[in-house]
Length: 439
Image (cartoon, rainbow, N blue to C red; front, side, top):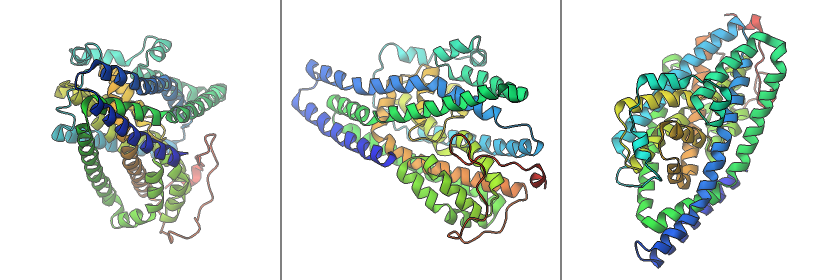
């Protein structure tokens, strides 16, 4: 499905460019008929955005509650989980900060001068105090937070709910299973929603080019090239950090993960590469009882490429609409992205959910996502491959940190470890043995 969807999106993009160009050359500039046609074309991406907003709250709630509740209270689990989260937070800060630095350096959206519906600019640049930011994190009602898609408040409630469910044990097991089922349901709905993406891409590009001409394509080319340059820098940083722990084996790791890397790049889905990544890390010397815990955790908390993209794309949208964000506001946005990017599964184009949530949180024009749809499939390939690199490095480093990294096998040999038990979502689950976890 992922390959077909990518093909359909490319077809929608090409058709959108052709139709938009035909309309642009058929009507004189400023013709109200052209504006009306473009407005009808824009209905397609608007429907897509409504569907994206529909899944934000239940997806984040279900994923985080089930994930936190399932972490358990083993001392070994806590130690490994703590080290994993410390690495993930560090990598997240690096990724998001790099995106903010590069987008402010290159300024790919400056000069586009789009106009948002309503007085969005004033709303976005309103006084955003630290007191207001902190107070808005904590919900007065979980239902109100869900109804208003207040992502930060949903995350706070999910944290309390997950920890409480873990504390009450078997009594809360039905709720945990319900959250796992809800998470699977929302991911399935996300799959359905993404099938409408080619139409949204067509409408978005046709509407933009019809009113602004083919010159906008140059901006897209610059945006994509600058983002991939940023990913190259991020790869260098991640592999360099890994080399501090793994020494020369970091080059061997790069060789072992080339197959899951290519799979992730071609399908634009981190999940599609997970089974192969498990096998290759087995051969690299990572015990499955480590990778079976750290990799799934990383797929929710360590999407380095996606996190860099969220900061890069969010500021790009603000620039495109001429909205100035102060350094303080961008730092607040960085901290928000640190939180909102957690718990989102590595499914194709899931970053749009995070960007939509962040734009809503800061009052930025949500329709700016339409600017990304035309090239998002190409951006998704790069950031998904980066997610795989980041999680492979993180898992290997934590294994080395625990003193459990074994000698490597031939990359084409049979994996040395039996698979861990399969979780409800079909991924390899955690097979904890308290004795084997001791140093």
